[in-house]
Image 1 (tube, one colour):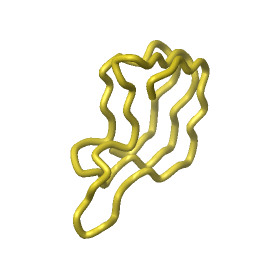
Image 2: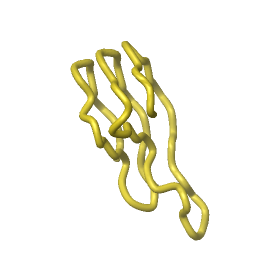
Image 3: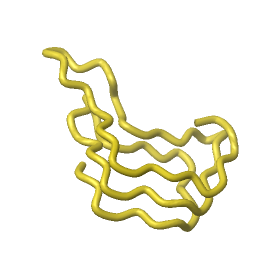
Image 4: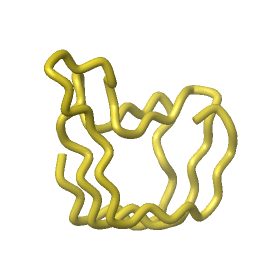
Length: 70
């Protein structure tokens, strides 16, 4: 994400790569040009990516992050 996002809602998603050779590196990435404030990220399956579940070049500010499988 390279834009400002305020109060996003992510709930009940599966964001992963189940190919034999994984090409998707992260389920969620916030770039250094992006901003994430508030919102809720709950009950998502972010597992199965080539590198990691998340990559935050700019840390998210606030919000609720819970019960996500990584």
